[in-house]
Image (cartoon, rainbow, N blue to C red; front, side, top):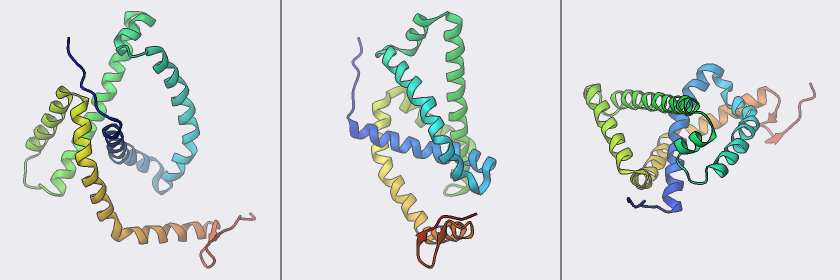
Length: 194
C-alpha cells in the first residue's frame, strides 16, 4: 500500500496563486481580449455573480458527496458506466486542450524573448518533460516547485510592470473622466446626471 506524502497549507496557497496567474494570463486573457477588446474588465465584473452561483453550490454538493473517493468510483456509483466515460472523456479532453494551449504559448513566449535561437521542438520537449516529471512524482513536488517559482514570478511581474503602471493608471482615469464617472481636478467620484 502506498503512502500519500502530504504538504502544508502554505505550499498549497503558493501553488494555487501561481496556477491562477498562469491560467488568467495564458488561457483566459487572450480569449477575453479578443472577444471584448478594451472593455474586457467589465465582463469579469458582470459575470462574477453568475460564476459564483454556477460553481459554488454544485461544487460544494459534489465535494460533500464524494467524501474522498476517486472521481471514477463516485461516478460509477451514481449512474451508468457510459455516463462515467462521457464525463471522463470530456474532463480529459478539456485538460489536454488547456495543457496543449499552455505549452504552445510557453514555447512561443520562450522563443520570442529569451531563447530565440533554440528550436521549438527542443523547448517543447523540455517543457513537456518537466510537466510529465511533476505529474509522475505527484502534487507535492508541484507544490514545492511553486514555492520556489512564485517569489521569482511575482518579482518579475512587479519589475516589468512598474515603468508603465503610472501611465496605465493615468490613462484609465482619463477614460473614466471622459465617461463622466470621476473628476480628475478634485479626485472625487461623481454621479452622471444623464
